[in-house]
Length: 116
Image (cartoon, rainbow, N blue to C red; front, side, top):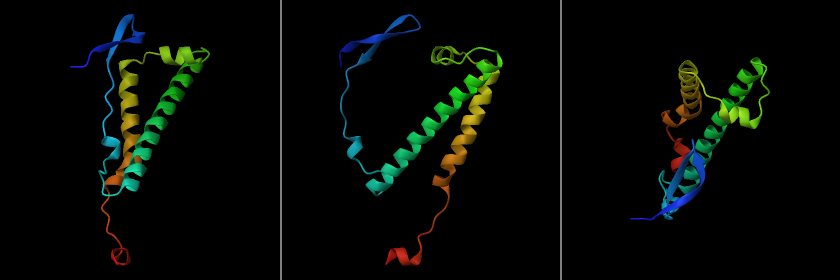
């Protein structure tokens, strides 16, 4: 078992710990039949995560501004949403994911010329 390494930060006033990192070879695997397609899917997923992070920060900034609070980085990161806001954000995140990723589920048929 890996020995725990003391982490440099605290979370909510508690010391955190992390297991030592073990490099795997999953980055060399081909999951979708073509490494280029794997790369495109990875980029698409990462961009979706970034879009949601920016959108969530924008939502918080707008809420802070509406309360006449300057939306500093610290104020944005310290913001605690209500249960209703969390539910609203979850619905927005699900809708974003559906808009972005439903394309992966559509049925496709390769053109006859592609198989030659």
